[in-house]
Picture (cartoon, rainbow, N blue to C red):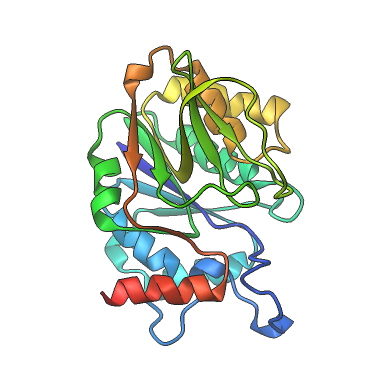
Length: 256
């Protein structure tokens, strides 16, 4: 069984900046003319290969449920499980991923792989299909410059271990050990060992509940014994949609 987790719980503060309260919207549901031109719709089309899709929402959750019910094709609706994150405003992104993993592991015992992608991304189909078709655990990177105020840094140290760096306050970053390679994370991952994933998820809840989703992800990849079980995949076109200008850029790609 193949499971996909998409997290869309955040309050979309930058996306809704200077927008009247009554016009604010969940970022993944924003469109200008066609209700199919949303980040969520396009991502769901990309993951139609999966057996189940867990969508974790929070902010404007009812709008999310209504959109799926009214706009997503029935064949995809039948695969979707929506999960409500009641801590979307006071905990970080890690809690959404925790809830998504827990929902999947509690309900299905025959999971072969779990793909996690953040719901505010647009990725080209060719690159995304490489992630889908890979039979290993997957780390991804994009080709944007690395700036400490916005990038999630992925690096490989001298022991071939992979580690992440991110500053939630969007300040400076310090890398305090030698490294072989450094990347700008593509914020898309695949996990193949459900036992290790459960261990990482349980550890997050017990020790790291205030952390970002990297708390779970880092623990999982720390638990893997062999770096040969990991594939690094570059994403040719990658846009993190933080503003409405970002959306317009993404929409231009969709038209192409």
